[in-house]
Image 1 (cartoon, helix red, strand yellow):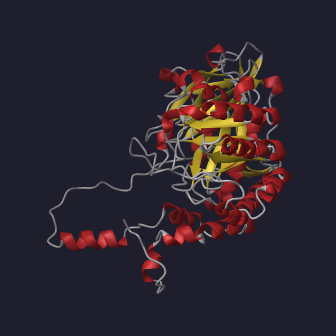
Image 2 (cartoon, helix red, strand yellow; image 1 turned 60 degrees about the vertical axis):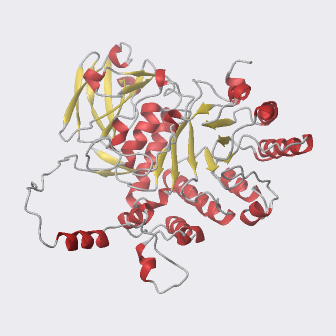
Image 3 (cartoon, one colour; image 1 turned 120 degrees about the vertical axis):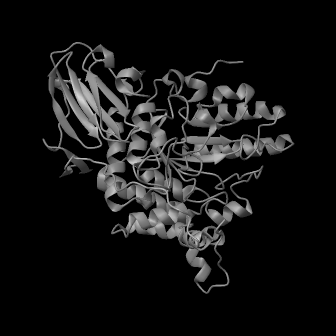
Amino acid sequence: MAVKNKKTAGADEKTPSRAQYFSWLSHTLEGATEEQILTNLDYFRWLKDTYGMQLDIFALDVGNLDGASGMYQTIDSEKIKKQYPEGYKNIVKTANSIGARLGLWCGPDGFGNTETEAESRREQMVSLCRDYNFGLFKVDEVCSRLRPNKRSEFCKMMEECRKYTPDLIVLNHRLHLADGDKYATTSLWQGGETYVDILTHNPCTAPHHRAFIFSRGEVDGLQRLSEDHGVCLSSCMDRFDDDLIYQAFNRCLILAPEIYANPWLLRDDEHAKLAHIYNLHRRLRDILVDGMILPDNLYGENAVSRGNSECRIVSFGNPSWKKKTVNVSLNEEIGLEKCDKVSVIIHHPYTHLLGVYEYGQSVPVIVDPFRAVLLEICNAEKVPKLLCDKPHLVIGENEFKIIDTKYEIKNIGVTASCDLPSDSVKLAETAFFTMDNDSLEARSLRRAGKTSIPEVQKCRDMFFNQKTYKLRGCEGKYAFDGNKDTFFDSI
């Protein structure tokens, strides 16, 4: 068996990350349509035009070629023709126009039972690389396993694909590929998705739903050829930016920053935060490939320092209800080599030059409850220029907003036990009836409020007007809309 290397896998541990979005949860197993994908690509065009945010890969997820449970398709099949009447050429053209490449979810097999069928499948996948320069394939067991007698076909297909796209990223989701493993760039770390409050949840009580980020951990040895399923932007949006700091800078895998689902459900002021994290990562990504885990007794659980000898990017957090002070040593403890003066910039949760210090000093950094912090610590002679000399948020390529950094959690009361009321059943039923059982996306929309951004509104309309969304009975309003073709599934 050949050894896995950069030639077979398309990347190695020193390959800088690719910035990605993938479409899962903007649609479900049925897949999307050309109109929907073009609408969503326009959102990323707006992010680029407005904030300078660059996406490397826009990946189509399940149902846009193959489907679940062995549903292998061809580009000219009846189903795919309905979704993409002209194939992928229009969405490829649009993605390329914003500097991105397409990716695709698929099964590992589909080679049929004859040589003709195998050749047809192979040509279909190779053509996506040869003709459209696809940047990623996600092969997933949700479609099927790879039959042992078709492993050689898979290997042959991958070899031919990489003749045209040597840097093709292949994600292996839960599959045993045998000899084909050397062609997979990554495996799925921890084996799960990150749909917040559905497939991932808090291990403790917290003021937001993303406190799992502090204890999720690190890939063994900080290996980067893994995939953590990215940051889900569909449900429970509060502190999505902290989640993305851990994904992009703390783990910094081959796909980073990586988001999926419905970023258009963010508030209007939050798109700038999203873009700022992508832009910051892009500036630093070449040096982020090397990292070290910091002592947890000093920096807390899962604290990481990345970078080179002159510039260190340090990330850590505070999974508690009280403010925490972390004393950051400006020396070899974080991987910084000896120099004269050291500049310390905080980039998250706001941006500010904390100061210029002597090499070897210890700098106290206050971390607010259940927040992440990102620092850039570098030789003062090479400090990047900031937009402002006061604490601020970056809200554009050359725009900022000065902020108050005070952050307090207030106690709103103390609960006490009481006797069971005589009408407890009535009270319980009333509570159940008034409880919000709408989809998490509908709740995210209410949280976000109205948008003044046309590209965002079009994506929202496209999502909530999908027939498959309405047919699932996702919102309570359907119970009383007078339409016999809708219903509310409260279970």
